[in-house]
Image 1: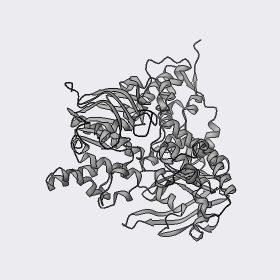
Image 2: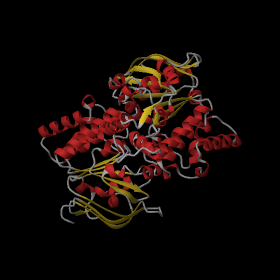
Image 3: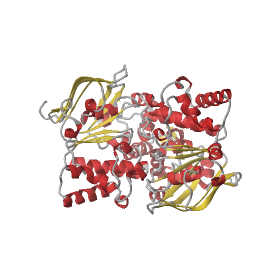
Image 4: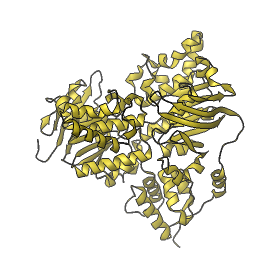
Length: 583
């Protein structure tokens, strides 16, 4: 091992068993002690595989062909198993439920320190600190698998923190967290890494937040390094990042597009603060001016409080829900959803979004109140009738996929309808075509990417042709390009007349697609209105730990230049910024 190198990956090629194409090809990376490395790339780039090397899950747990060498703190990972490396390396999986197994959150966090024989008094202090760090103080006695996806992510992070490793490997650590929770985690992780001089490897798709934290940025594609350098330097390569399907910060993309139109910029901004400084500077210098041709149209949307009251499809009347452990998840929710709505349910983790969605589907019965669908009590319908009325796609597609082929998975529900073989095949092919799965029907769903599995899950619901689609976190764990593909398909469903309800933490995507937003806070509805109206109220949103899209916040920060407060996309911002010609 080279001096002053904590992790050394030398000429590594790895091919998983039963596959022909290497997941990693001739990879060389050196990481110094206390260095913070940001790794990103499209789905299938090899990011998670790289994480598995560092705590020796590869080659001790996952089997395949390994060439080259990985050395961590002087230990060849081919010779030292995970039970040895775990004292040095803490790994958070991209799917946190895979590493949670204790009966309570407290036991989950205490498990590691107990196995390190740390004294009980010190364990209590460690657990208390981790609970506070991850905002889990009120979840001590809850079962980890009864937590929301975001809360599970926080619990996994707390359990790793409690081990006090020298090296942290965080694979999508904020994928299920609300915007405020994401910011808190990154701030605390930075404080932890810098203060205690930890080495950090963070795999993320959120380029803006992580670029301020990392010392170095590595972009992978098909198992190879495509870009490497300081985050600011790498993020100047907007074309390359976009081609790879990565989500460039909106302020960066705006400046890049202005640059292509002739604005001279020495460096592209990589954060909201830099974006404000860049655009305000151009306005002050007279290089740009604000020309808002759509002010009247947006003004109408701002004052719109609720959609048209005609054709109420779903009527939630005074909905309360208390979990068996006593947690009050919903507290008197009254909500009308109209035929043809494209609605986003947003709010911090644990605010009641998924609980409300599951009640509308009929998976949970409300403790109090009732749900009417087209005037009929939902819970008086049979299971098949509910499936034909409300379709539900889970946050993790693996929670609802179990068949051996994609064809069987899509058509499984038809077994209960007793249709002819021809009729079944027709419905399967129709759903597969809508989700662009025709070429994958004979594959095992667990042999395809998560993005394809997400489409399989949607298709298996679409087979019943329900009036209402509820999709919980459709873009979790996906790169930006694949997220857009999923959301474009959901938009297609909306265009053919389906009513759509999306539960999400991705404010930029929901701003582009949803027409109406419901903001949840502590089991109650905080805001209900058009997407423009809701995102035009940043102070109210802050109460629910929600931030508007970056481009919206940029516009609101430039209000003195008459930039409207309800800009939702980069394209809209570009349309009101006119480049002034030099006479």
